[in-house]
Length: 188
Image 1 (cartoon, helix red, strand yellow):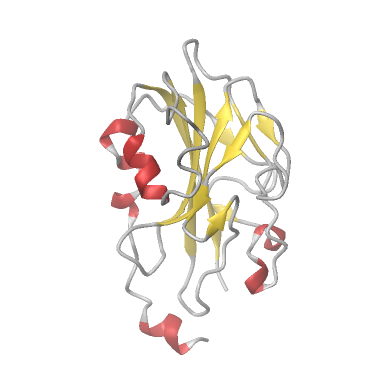
Image 2 (image 1 turned 180 degrees about the vertical axis):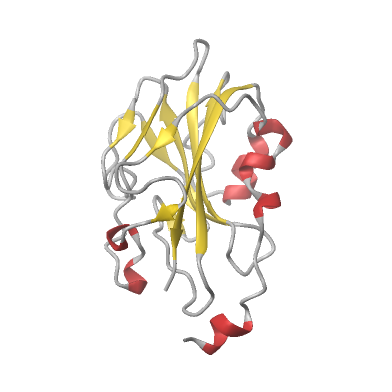
């Protein structure tokens, strides 16, 4: 067990700082978000974890119910609510074309993304950053949040490519037509 993880065991960002709780991202919870790799509340398989902890850093496959009429695009945010920080750690921020019905495993990597998927910078780099919690810190909850937006998240998707995730989220204004979430757990 890591001494650092043990010392920080009670320090956690918490759910209040999630994108889900931003007033601009409030909306009906009618999107069904799921993954064949793990069920809601279940462990995330090791292949989806960060390379630093022995994983392959392959984004998990995701699928969702049809976005409602009037959806301009989808916004996907993955955050770790148990990170020992003031706010949840952003593992991914991506804009997805409304016509994309699902993502295959690895589709959110920074090197190659399928058409209609635009990953922005996460807290550590661009594209998907797999779970890599501090050893001994206990279980970490990774919240996958999908928002169906009536207007584009940002006017020019290339402009904020190097902006910090929280700065990009601050630019997003509703209305949110639907939203859904999926939580996976990872511990080391």
